[in-house]
Length: 447
Ligand code: NDP
Ligand code: 2IT
Image (cartoon, protein in one colour):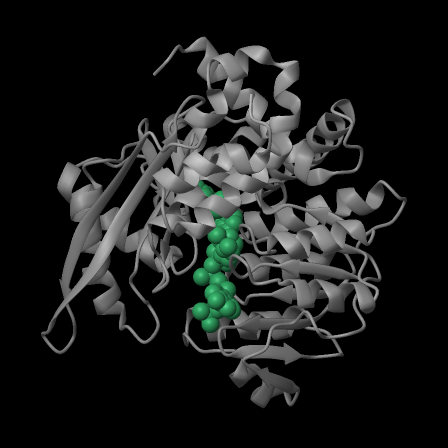
């Protein structure tokens, strides 16, 4: 047994040098799991946590493509297949210029615990490329997706590994990827999720992550007899997760006064209502524009290069953009401004010191791997529908999503309580996610 988290981390850092995001994600889980291992000596004996920190497989490949000027462009493609003890690898693809192996390993690692929490049969994986979609034409995105899939096709399948969207990968990209997969394999089946509703996509999948995050926050507040109604909120990001979080907050009677993207933040004290949100959806997905245009159009304040966390007047905060976007100084501003709850829509958006500061100062804090699991959960519902060759109604899927989020919340709470960490959603999520995968790995031997 390890004397400290540092001792556990030492070989992880030595074997995966320079992968800071991956180290951060593993350390956060180790902090929750190492203290409970003495209650499960067989997991120590069988080195379950050590095995979980090593990907089953990671592939890296060249993605060449030709731009609109006829020039050859080159990107790096990846698929990290982290753990398949409880089901086929499942997790998104990210296209962003920051993508590297460390980021995808952290995301794949988080995905293992998240997918376990859903209680559905999904292992964890993640992939993507250092491709920057900003400023690329539809044709360029299509050629890139076709080139990426020409290699990725070798590693995926409906019972092997089922990718989906993430940052920079939405309906357009999933369409191009699916088209190339179908052309190469001559198969029409559920190999990707987040597909269009006409060709196998589940209703509510686009909304699922954002809606699920807000359902999770509602459950956290309901514990104290409170709710979203009448609350003022900050939401970072302006993409898939952020937009649908705003939509659900509005539906439940809350008000969102700020959002942001890579160019900066908008501050709209009157609230981003349904009509303004529809304008943002068109801006982001049709015009491929940025929020500075919202500020200009609706005559509200734009804060160039800033995030939303310094903006006063809110009680609830939803980080829905990217990893490490909420830093210690932001956490301090949130506490000083009276924020009561931080519910993570993005994966690992709070830095470790920020998360600790929020918890120490009495802010209700939910980690992404629990709160944003609604997206992958509905992805699994999409796989079920595809396997049965039928579609479920919007109401049916949203009802199942709601039940799943309520259950994840309950599981995090009761597990935290059981292990003496009452009210600690981070410990509850890590332990509950770990136990299911650990038991499956134990049953399946040293593989
Ligand atoms: P999108 O690409 O749809 O949106 C991402 C948003 O975040 C964009 O508005 C983008 O701005 C902004 N953003 C990205 N990087 C930065 C940055 N460095 N600084 C400021 N803003 C930034 O992605 P998603 O909404 O799908 O994903 C958001 C987060 O949620 C990610 O952490 C993802 O891993 C996580 N997630 C996603 C799920 C899903 O189903 N899609 C499921 C669970 C988690 P701009 O457009 O200007 O680049
Ligand atoms: O981080 C995530 O959970 C996702 N990007 C969604 C994964 C999925 O397979 O739907």
